[in-house]
Length: 296
Image 1 (tube, rainbow, N blue to C red):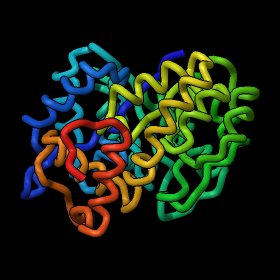
Image 2: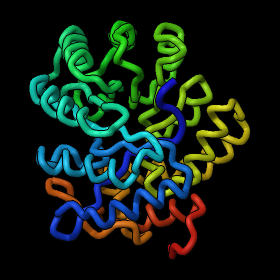
Image 3: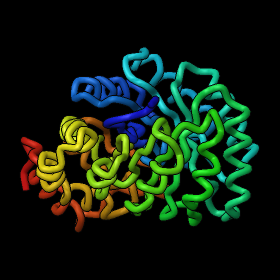
């Protein structure tokens, strides 16, 4: 098993002008390492990869690699809706000291299952770093079906999936048909505890940006089969899970991290700062999750 446990889908810190804030990135990485985060996902959905230029994308990855310095694995998002562009970015990123590629299903153009099979197969064959499939129909408009995942799992360089549908029945299908070494990673914080209790290996978490220590404890409990402890931890986090998706990710999580002093007030259009009418609910959810120093 390559990828397991508590993995953060890290935000990309930006200043008020929307420029990538490399000095804040260093602080975020140390914050997570001290809290027990077991891997970083850089330049994923939460990292606003859709609005990073190619140069920014690669610079962000390179800088994160320098800062982490091999202490935990680094997985990088390199997917797009173009196979050629995905190949270009993936092969370039694979030349850096990363540990894996997270490749999202092609969005907008809505390929068939066969099209996605060929897309992922071509990328996995072209790169020398492990590939994790990323299925998030709520954002891409296309669902990588379980039977296609099973077909892809045979490829020696496709090592797991980030499954963000919230469909827990898929865990058993994947585990039964993809083998014990295929990493099953939840991409849905709200159902991640049950996902792991059913046999998943970890979570690529948005919530971990705010409470990395608690997500680590949740993963430790759920992945070891301690249902009671996992459910107790998850119960305290459920309101926060909901609040962090009250507007499109990463709008709420960036605002929450601003309140904690972890990032500046920077996000790129077309995303905007969290609307005032949602801010009270998010603060209350943070308090409920046990974050100190918050005023309701």
